[in-house]
Amino acid sequence: MIQKITLIGAGNLATCLGKSLKEKGFDILQVYSHTEESAKTLAEKLNTEYTCNTDNLNLSADLIIISIKDDAIGGILKKIKNKNLKIVHTSGSVPMKVLKNHSSCCGVFYPIMTLSKNRDMDFSDIPLCLEADSNEFLSELREMAGRISSQVLEIHSKERKILHMAAVFANNFVNHFYDISENILKENGLSFDLLKPLIRETTSKIMEIPPHDAQTGPARRCDKSIINRHLKLLKNNPEREKIYKFVTDSIISSYKKTNDKPERKTKKN
Amino acid sequence: MIQKITLIGAGNLATCLGKSLKEKGFDILQVYSHTEESAKTLAEKLNTEYTCNTDNLNLSADLIIISIKDDAIGGILKKIKNKNLKIVHTSGSVPMKVLKNHSSCCGVFYPIMTLSKNRDMDFSDIPLCLEADSNEFLSELREMAGRISSQVLEIHSKERKILHMAAVFANNFVNHFYDISENILKENGLSFDLLKPLIRETTSKIMEIPPHDAQTGPARRCDKSIINRHLKLLKNNPEREKIYKFVTDSIISSYKKTNDKPERKTKKN
Image (cartoon, rainbow over all chains, first blue to last red; front, side, top):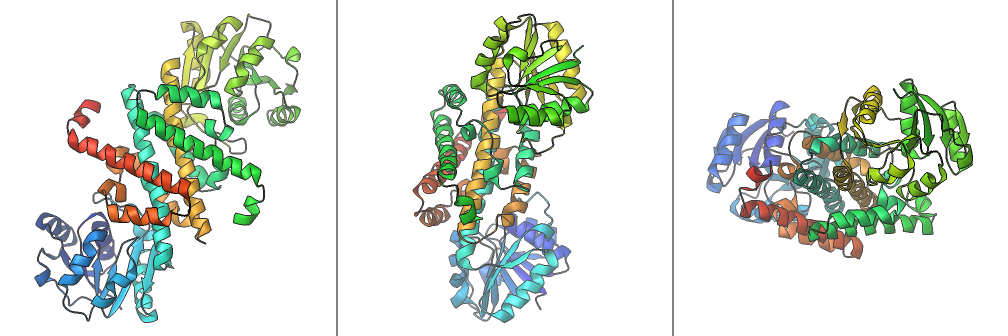
């Protein structure tokens, strides 16, 4: 059973995960970050020790969790000389196999969530995607994950990559459109608050019906006169104009496809 | 005071608005739609009369609400011979002035919301944007709007157009990305439900902090290796690949701008 954990990383995900694990009774032995300030800040939150030196890593833990930028994982692994460790990473897009030659048991512990250091996050509803190189280790990870979330799934590297990419569309890209929207309003002296009830409803709708059926608006209706009026309004900002055109065309063509092939639903649902 | 209403239109917005007005005690004298089935369906819901013939429009109402496709507004107005009427339309992008020559008082009653016929909607939190050609008529509309919503604002045609366009970004475009996301998952045998907690959190975050500050993910971190891995995954779908590239570049450049000009916040907030 996993009880003692060394946490490599002190970013958004490491912070939220560390706090949640500690709350659920796990012992966080140590926090590592290459920036002393980050390591110290998180260690204080978790009431534990920290280091910025890979030579001083506490490797007596039951599990090493690597929760750092994808690009940095390889570098950290090279610094860990002891190969007799259980190691997981938390990345959506790095395959499990990168850990293989650096550990006795390896796995992945990927939460499907957007996390910010200063935003407390209850992990209990967050889907945790697990992968492990043995059934025994998978069971251990399942037990650990089950203590912090009610949604624990086994997802292999290939599907995890897909999930992560789909999450970029549904989270980062969506957020960027909120950002553009807020900027358009600000530049015209209008408050983004005016759109918040609409945004809440847009989200709440797709919790119940498929987004494809939930769509409304000028592109959905192929209402060329509104679309052209909007494009005219965007003339002074070629990037926004291009993005408007592009996404509008994509919506129009996605409903054309449905109309052309009414069997799509049967095929895909 | 406005009490008796004739409703021209039987689409999503007309349906939700009609139901809400009836609930709050207004008398819906008649529903008009050029399709008999739609007119009949809504009239039954509102327990009132209907017509599909503009010659039979009940013009004895205190207010005529035109809630139909933007393109159809002009056509309906030509059919209304009585010029001694109070008329509003509910469109986000049609200027008030199109009603001018067809009414004694004209105005706009634009709810910032996405509405579906079969989805009950509580109007009480929906911002209602009003415009009128006189202070007297504006007061009447304010009184009426205040009975169904706590958020009533005066917004002129120019700002309303901007609002409507910003809403397309924050609602229709966002929803399209949910759709793409669901399709990516489906094609790989994964459930869209896995992303729902993330989507809820993305939305909930921007209720509290500006979207620009809420952004996370590979584009925000300019994490080229993940971005390239995602683009590789999208190779088999050139349209999605293009959209991924395009929005990613737009995010990267939007944070470059912030870094280049740290005074941006002060300027825009």
